[in-house]
Image (cartoon, rainbow, N blue to C red; front, side, top):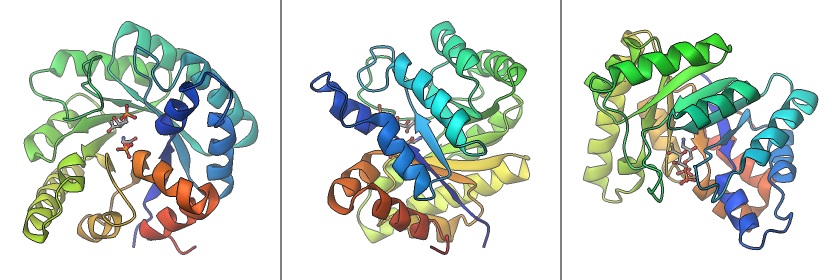
Length: 248
Ligand SMILES: CC(=O)[C@@H](O)[C@H](O)COP(=O)(O)O
Ligand SMILES: NCC(=O)COP(=O)(O)O
């Protein structure tokens, strides 16, 4: 079965740290434990109010990944404002994921309309490619939105898995999985690689992986951080890698 790589979103760790403006829990320290335990990469989703990830976290993570973890992936997610794009231009991550957030949103809750926002997404994609990063576009499980991303020159789509994660009855879950499977197949046929994320958990990841075995990468933060409080970060990473289908 193809490998699905795990990227650890450290937003929730930063949010806990920011409660007291003290240096703990350490975003770089816990990222290092996650990488040491075999996580493929680190994801951050800085928001304009810096309520969790700060610009200084991006700088420190960039330096740490370059110095200590060459070959691992840094993924920065966000809305393509000038401020966001220049932050990415300075950090030069491996991947930039474009997300259609409103700054007032509590969290991401939908993907792009890749047809209506063709100009914005094409321009942002070209600029990001110009500094050497891969581009992933956050989309709902809708084949038209997924294939629309290919027209902008994107390399990947990240499927918004919130509706799957928030559905707990078996019939509803099967319906959400079917949408993800059909959309992922359409994206793959359009030449895109597939990422997925939002409210993925140890419980719901195996069925997603079974339905869409060719997912290249999942980015997981909220549930993974909650699990790390119970199991510790290193053991949590081992469990998520196993749920991704890795032999650990
Ligand atoms: C795009 C996505 O689903 C995640 O990046 C998620 O939005 C994390 O953001 P928060 O940590 O602000 O909820
Ligand atoms: N791109 C999704 C992500 O990074 C993590 O989302 P969540 O697990 O915090 O919901």
